[in-house]
Length: 217
Image (cartoon, rainbow, N blue to C red; front, side):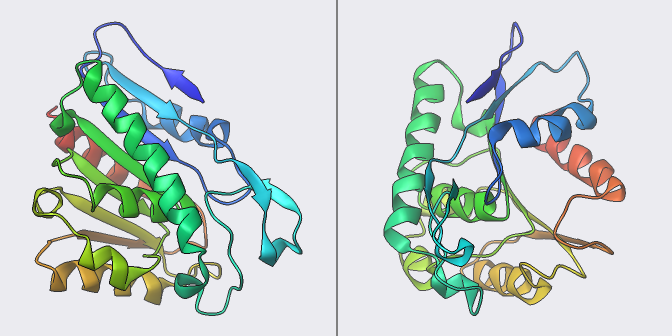
C-alpha cells in the first residue's frame, strides 16, 4: 500500500483502484489534483489481492472481487469477495480513526471495481464520512447493500462521475446506482463527461473542487 502521509495531516483520502491495476496506478491522479500545500492530506492507496478472474479466463489479476460475466455486471460480482474487500477497507478506516483521524475528515474514493468496494464499505459504516467518491462505477449486490444502509451513512456526501461513452461500465449503471441512493433518501451529486472508462482532464477540476469542499478548504 502506498501511504502518502505529510506532516500535520488531519484529513485522509483512501483511493481504491480498478480491476488489474494497483494503488500505484492512482498515484498520478493524486499528484495531478495538486491540492494546496496548506491543506496537508494523507493519501492511502491500497492494493487489491491477486485472484483468478473469470472474465480474464481465470488468469490472476489484482481484483477486489471476481466478476463472472460482463453481462449484467452488477449481478456478476462475487458477493463474498465484495464483502471481504469491504471488510478490509473498513478495518483501514478504523485504523485511521484509532490514529486520531475523525471519520468526518476521511474520504473514500474508488474507480470502477474500487468504486464498488468504496460504496459497499461507506454505505454500511456506523459513522458518517467526509465523502464517498464514485468514479465510473456501479453498485454490486444493490438489494443487499440497500438493506444494510446505515443511518450514519445517509449523511455521507456522495459524488458520482461517469463517462458518457463508457463501454466497460455503461453510463446506465451509474444512473441506476444514483437512483437507488436517491430512493433511499441520499442526495448524490452527478457529473458526466464525454469520455470512455477513464479519468479525463475536464473531470480533474470538478474532482478537486469536490474534494476541497469535503475537506473543509
